[in-house]
Image (cartoon, rainbow, N blue to C red; front, side, top):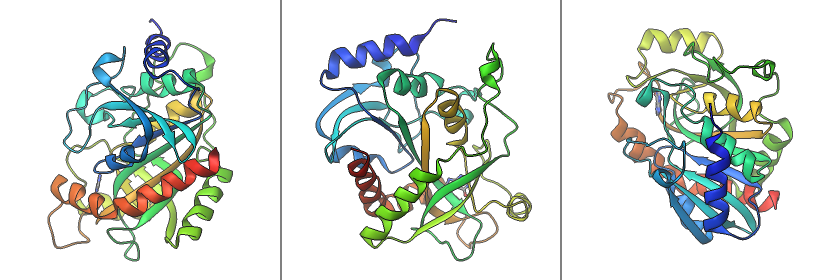
Length: 269
Ligand code: HPA
């Protein structure tokens, strides 16, 4: 296996110039407009980056944006690929490793998610405190050396989570804390699955983020992650679940989310 992330990092350094980014950011469904806040932005389509996946999901742009976010040099993945598109849990391995190769110390992940908690409705933002990998997949399967035995006991960095909570408080945004469960998708969960996973300790469910967290910890990146709640999970709301609802509700919550991640970037500068 080659090391496409080294080539991708070279392309990015050549095109973006300037200082190395210190913060990587991944934007979830409908949350792409944080990229509009990046000053002096250089936009590089994923197709120009070796090893970067095509994302065919509506609401996901598929470009890397490098620039300054509130004074902090960032590399922002506007769009991600999902396991359910490719059947490959490691589909985000190259983008994540490219972040590390560029010199980012922190990866801030975001997603749209369903809530299993009656008190955390659409429009809420939840800092991920831990995860349940319910997919049975792992992006490090097949990785050839002992580095694959990654410790996930503090996968979501407690200090970064505290910092995110401080930023939220200063902005007057309620920040929930909770456990995110990864389902493979692309079909939504059944009500029985939601009752089961809720009993097992999940506060939110979604189809991303967990493989990226595992890859990031493997690459030595510190991780902070937030879910934008777009719906109550299956069986908990009258409206049928749909990607339309995900996009609509994440767009509605995106102002708060955008302020939160911009504030985080500012504090990490
Ligand atoms: N389940 C899985 N993924 C999701 C959901 C959900 O309810 N909402 C947004 N992404």
